[in-house]
Length: 406
Image (cartoon, rainbow, N blue to C red; front, side):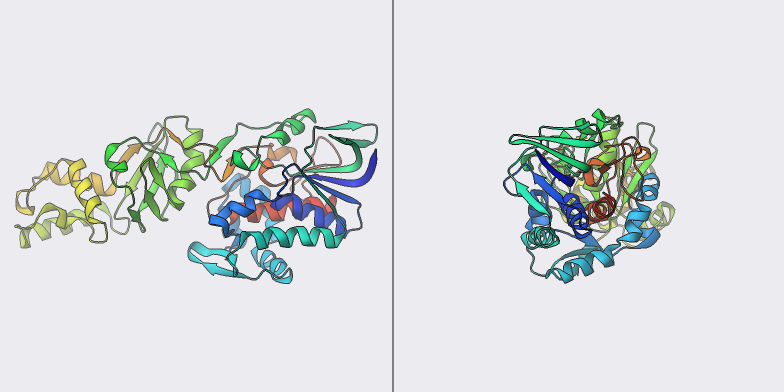
């Protein structure tokens, strides 16, 4: 039986960060990964480039996770903000550069450089990194934790669980960590796919496959029409529905609404409805012979403008656009609602919504409030953020705290 100070289960972003900080404190640290290739989510993220973090900071950064989750993350994010993450990777030989949507990527454009830097730092700090070894059970015997492996047992004073959630099953995500947390008395909330493309069954949406919009507001509404979340970020129409940053940001809320969700488009968010109608009336008086499509924002692609006119059930010229038809067209431009039954699921989700109940974890250390010596970090926690490096940022920050305390 092997005896160490800290066992970290999972060699992803959170686990690697936890292991290197634990080892750097002089703790005998064993980092275990069941896959032969550690850090698979790092390797496939950002199209193989890895969006490491964001340029946002302070209260603005915390707000991106929502009020409850942002409050839980406050200490972690302020202790290890994006500027510190950048400095960490710079010192590790992986400089970052800013791209669209306040994202930071490796200058090399290689996710492998991010993964390799983390593992290199782990080993340099003295952590023993073992891959291709699946943990079979995590328990407690006397004053030590016992981690069961195919090759025998490892005893440890502390255990850090960083096994990730249920997203991207092809990376080996099976939710093992949830069961181990439950065995120690933890509550695991309902888990949903998040940051996934949306399934939309309306034919006109699917017919717009390939169109990209920027500057359109997209919101998710509940069954009573109340807004849950709104985004003004790029939208991609696909043969299955909607993808891109805005739709994917809404996926967790869509899933939680269990078939009752709608998304609402505002294709002209910069102008109030009444002002837009006044513009249309003036255009009709001055250019009555023009086609109705001429009223719609010129930046919208022609195929989309045609689809909106068809959805509104209007046709002809500005001069013959009756009041009721004009109101339907306004509705299509400013408040077009489409049922969205679900996302494309965990196979396409970048993160998991839900996880270990936050009230049961100390936000300053990531130590379980129910089992001393047990630490939970990364995607196992009920924490998720939007597209843009926020989930890696949370993983790095919570993993670091676990490693500093385990």
